[in-house]
Amino acid sequence: MKKLELYFHIPFCVRKCLYCDFLSAPAAEETKDAYMEALLQEIRGRAETYREYLVDTVFIGGGTPSVVNALWIERLLETVYQCFSVSEKAEISIEVNPGTVDGEKLYRYFAAGVNRLSIGLQSANDEELKGLGRIHSWQEFLETYRLAVEAGFCNINVDIMSALPGQSTDSYCLTLEKVLKLTPQPAHISAYSLIVEEGTPFAEMDKKGALQLPDEECERQMYKRTEEMLKRHGYERYEISNYAKEGYACRHNCGYWRRVEYAGFGIGAASLVDNKRFQNGRSLADYLANPLGCRGHIQELSEKEQMEEFLFLGLRMTEGVEENGFWDAFGKTLTEVYGAVIEKNIADGLLEYRNPEADRGRRLVLTERGLDISNYVMAQFLFD
Image (tube, rainbow, N blue to C red; front, side, top):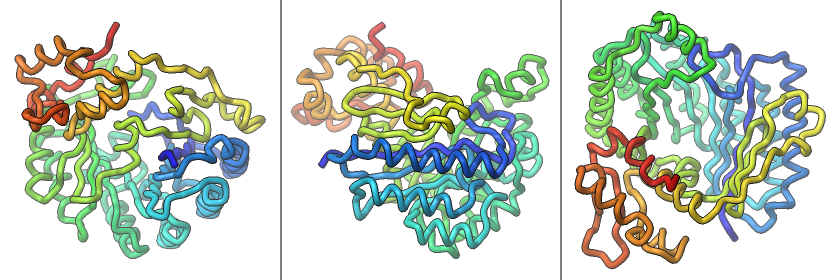
């Protein structure tokens, strides 16, 4: 059976963070309940489409999925198992934030089959957390982490952010140090640099000059220190912003970067099936009225678009793009299609071949310098 990844979007939060441009908002309990009922209806109504697939990963994201009653997560996973063929070794993840879970909720997640937890910390500095509009403190994160371990979770990711307003390299490294002192250490750490997105309060503050962001050199130092410190503690960098202990790379995200097919459920959720991309509408009212009638335009990807995605998604991973994989997908060599672009970036020290003597078994990877300016490199693989 073909592999399939499932994504479920739960678009609710306690309060919108100042940097957040995700499809999420606070809502009354009645609205959350109505949405979850609609989500279950959509799953049941669409599952037949995927009867030839084996579900390898499940990701419950948001928003903050942990703001809904634990009963809904239990019902969601029951429905998944009823409607899909699910691998016995499936990775099942849920995002949670401190301040939205307690011990009982975490135990219920674990008992329902969740085996990977992603906790949004962002910073161990309470002033920085307040500046982001987060609802929790460092101490509340510590309590959430302790309860998660007690509930049985050993595959835990911690999200942190760098280049925050008012943040110094030292204060960022202190966050890293505190996270690395957790017992047990997290299996996975996602370390993202803040991006000021249009339409957010941070964007408005930035336009007024009220956002004191670290300069480019400071941001570069944070980036370098992240890799150095995590490497010393046994974390492998397997993607531009993601680090894991051996065996704990996020399978769901790796599948996305490798273009494994995935189906999204809930408002705004995107899908890639049979080289077709489609997305649910973003209107909560429309979804509640008709969860099976909210799907937007279906885009059938051309071969060129598939090649572009193969390269700019695959190069995000430190294992890079395998020549054999490209040939198997398209019946052409990387050199035939992208020879000039590859040569230029190798000459510039931004790309290199790993295992260069192999016959079509080589991997094209970003160098350390290439990783620093990965967006620039990957943009060159777009045909237009």
